[in-house]
Image (cartoon, rainbow, N blue to C red; front, side, top):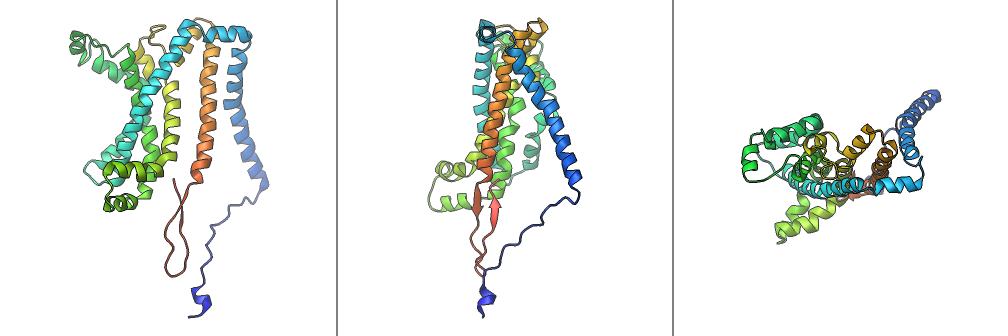
Length: 304
């Protein structure tokens, strides 16, 4: 065979997307920028302007007021419980869907998206129907002095329900693309299932897992509808930050309402920065498949 016959084949580049009319491109970019400014940047700026309108002293006084501090602590506590619970569920569900074949797999995969199609208010009402005083389990819970609705457990349950798809939906596609070859190789070399997970599976999905945790945490801290139904709006006890903002606004205490809202907006900005950083870092995770024996070409796949 000649050298030309065994020479590596140059990778085939995909078609380049071009716009024949620059005016169309400029128009589309302009429309996107206008929408971005009108519906995102201006409202966000208005929150901080209104929060600081009365001065820094008033701002810090309102966010350190006892009811505001209680709302902040409750929001952090609920997120600290709901996010790890969703991490456990997301890992278990994605592992089962991506690595195993079993009856009901499609049903499980569909049910993960259920909170996306159900209104948060409806999900809150479901828990009231189950655990409320007149609910299915209400009399039993009352007889054992267990309170779920209008207490921390109900808020946590409602938050978990509306946020559990975020981690699983980031992990399932990635784990399906990676396949089971690495885990099978580790098991064949004598590694236990737990060690295989820690040393093989978890490093391969760490960026997707962290990405899902960031999104889940942001939604948990900002959830309003489901939490509003099950919390009871008990000031200083069961009000999270979004509920506290609503109460302050309804009382025409606009400075305090915007001050607390600015904390949520700041959380959103921090989440956005982390999200962009993870997307940049995560998209850069490229895995290589073994070279083709005949040509020496390598297949590149994006690890997402």
